[in-house]
Length: 357
Image (cartoon, rainbow, N blue to C red; front, side):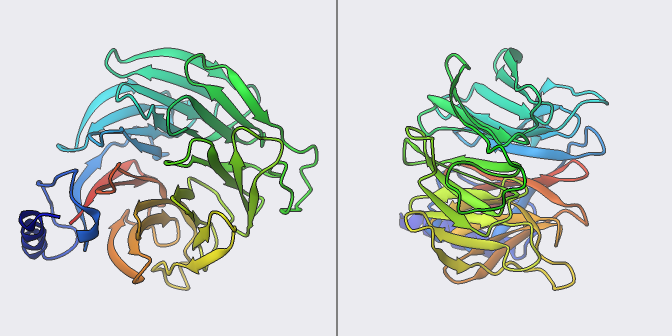
């Protein structure tokens, strides 16, 4: 890191003083090792309905953020200005939540949305058009993600099937079929999940690896070339939202449980590396819905216990900052490529954009 950047980072932290003050400067190429605090930069009221925001995703260059609402609306936000840009879909009173969003990793212009109505919609952002839609009949999609090269995307949800789609044709390439019995709670099973799936995440550096998790208290590691059974199983995490992330050789999980909700796991051995302390009182409980890596040593997690998202250095166990939603549950969060900017939203439709310094 250059001496100039180090001096700027030190000066910025002195000027800001305390968490919650507005920040209007910042560079997406800040070096992550210097992060010492998380500051809220924009508080953006985007309430489209009383159900709030259920999904967030940064564009590959980190300059745009997409938000999916409880009534099916989809809106994009300029990250630098904090202003709403486009309404890709205005939603409707009887609409169902947009539960997952993902930009094509090689294109700022292609956004895929999935919802609780089982509909997958592909948007051309430049033309503001829904260029393709399909429906997973009888399913409620809770999660979707692109592979690192953008060649395919995966979905999962209520019906417990994991579907892998060719991103060029939007045709199903492969399906991990759900088990016949909904009552089979043997989480040692490597074939499929036994209950609703809430998280699917592709490895950002490996072409073939992805992970899934849900209500059956297990996280499963898959190779997209061999989908008859999972490579390995992590026992314990109770996933109820976008509560899984993967980086290099580690997986972080955020469980909807009162204690020890935030955990770090070894990708290869499936063993627990550490419980990461999350700041919540015993009365509140932790109850996490969402978690993301921000850098090699930082995670951001949030949920309904403290009604906030916290950035935590899991090496030192230090809390670098907190984004509070004022008694509203955190349903979703995302971290920009490079780990510099954090978006947090949930019930009430209020969006917060924060940055590390």
